[in-house]
Image (cartoon, rainbow, N blue to C red; front, side):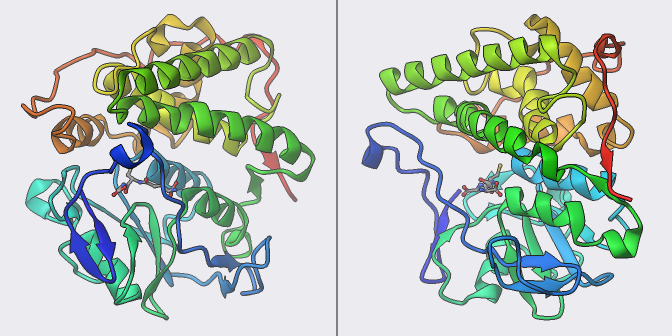
Length: 334
Ligand SMILES: N[C@@H](CCC(=O)N[C@@H](CS)C(=O)NCC(=O)O)C(=O)O
């Protein structure tokens, strides 16, 4: 675990002392956009054209942020257009690696050994954290975006002309509702598990673990009334919550001490989790071996013995009851 400073790799853990025991996530820095015609992104970001086999996605199968992008890639039919390489689950003193003998696919495009090399190929003086997911442009030979929230939106629309897949996970009429629930889920759940798990101060941990379960309780109540987070349609808001829920009982409950309750203890969240897991294409993106090995082995400040637990035994294929609420699938823009 480390970061780049002026293009040099420094092996250091998150500095929670600077923030009174708090883990503070750094914002992603590479934010170019891909659009159908290469025009600018939705906030005027520099745009690059959506072209077959030009972009390559670098992920970890363990990472919840990368997982969002893998699900969109799958559900938007981009597997033949955007290649993917995955890291080893172990994130050690050189950060993420592409060592095949440790479970990586290897880097199919650049053949690098360590993920941080992709960042210094992009900018020899790069300063910042070296994260997955990240999208590589084979034409310009650089990373163009390393923010999963952006990549989800890019995959949602940019390649539609090439794939003919017009499923819309961020439909215009639902954007306000999606943005509002995303903000709550991001702060208190997606990032909330990390804020609790990486805290190095009891009061900081207490604060974040309580806020996390209050947010889960809010989602539980919402899902009692409606099938999906934004109503009757499945949207990116659901994908973004799913990647944290699927890791929860297996990792966050034990390793990050998010243990007031399990997802299994929530009637609505647990059935909702199973519906999404069983959604065609989704379970193929879930790799529990990578998930458990990554967290328990890589975070040796939290788990110094690096013992990876055998449980819990989860049966996510058993039936769910979500048909009791009206659901309309995913919006399609014809
Ligand atoms: N904002 C980023 C965060 C991605 C992120 O933090 N990924 C983790 C893996 S789950 C990572 O690569 N961490 C390495 C580090 O922070 O040094 C996104 O959503 O894309």
